[in-house]
Image (cartoon, rainbow, N blue to C red; front, side, top):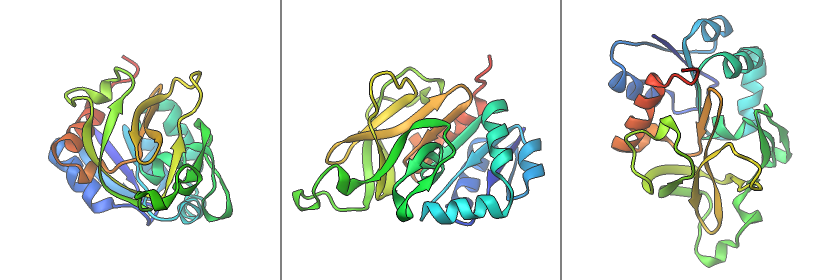
Length: 213
């Protein structure tokens, strides 16, 4: 099994790489910004950290957008943090950035939903519970309402009930989307590589997940 971790220069790449080696020691796992390697891989991890505009600038610089879109339609693709936010239609960050449009929705600053003076500091940094909203294979072996590590100032507000892609919710002054999934794409707002045993279990599930089965 060949797993490509997409390197856009703004992710916690080494930690993701080491966590995947831990859960899939027999897999060939590499960090890359080469579109050809991403296209050859059996599974693709799309991490992200920091500003989303910089993330997209790197995506364009390395000519990776087509490879990512092809991965989304052909093989298991796992997004982390900004890698999840980039999958939506639009983000308000950096003055407004168009997303990949894999999921319908808007990424907005926490201040759009609650006031910082009520005690919720921005960015959210630390552990928070995730409520699983669907019985997805990626949650196998992970109990509901487990804690994962978050670090972000922007979030996706809960869409209307017709959006069946929501796989997990968290609450930080208001309820927001913590995990999404449809077809062979799954993505999370939190950092599984920093989330101890449950995070490792999620990454292990990704290495074993066969969405077309």
